[in-house]
Image (tube, rainbow, N blue to C red; front, top):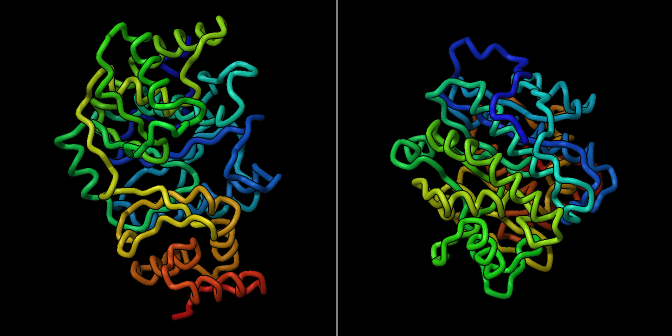
Length: 345
């Protein structure tokens, strides 16, 4: 059973901890990443992490601690960028690793549970925590998020769903059935599905979640071993605990984050949504985000830029959020020519 008291702290937990920890978790695994087309998964993920941490350093409150949890060292290209923004690398063991053939996709996402567990055991009891997917960027002030954690214990992104929509193999009715079996409760009308792109906790919320993880994880493994339906992803498992333990949860949708789809066939950006402080961009993992990484590498995009509005315009253009298709087509052409969008009107 995974321990709630890891002893692998490479940082000094006795020192005065900052008021906010921003974390990302990544481990290499052999399951599918459906939104990633490239074969060079390691390089792409480290490019994503470097860009996410760079934008976090630009927009997060001063003194925020940035931590990348990974069992894999940064690539030689990503390491200097992470060092430049003072992001710590913590190699905590993958204790919540699913067994072989557990599920065909997203197995590495369970490593987020280990990151949360490490934070609960190794950081000050008055910290706030923000965990982001690697394919997120921060583009705005998150002071309001921390203010919300004074009246709510958790902020999470409630997913809209249709009854015929399968989220990682489970219909909403399937998730409700599992919640009944795990909890023994009959009424699951309040079950909600939350996305894994953003979780924010105050110390109470994080401790409540991590304390409940080992028991549910062992029960989930037992169901898998018996060939029964189970929680396939960390989103399923965390959504269950949010429902079962009923912490004070604030829905991040519409205020703090959106899952943007930026393909040519499906785009869900609406004018004004660039004001959200966190953008999740699954389709840009191996498109726009690596281009931004290259611009950071070549210093076409500065890590120390203080012009936030200019930075946001650059990020929106690079990541396909512009509603003006002439600008989008122009950017794609410039990218193919090896030129930067930075500095264009």
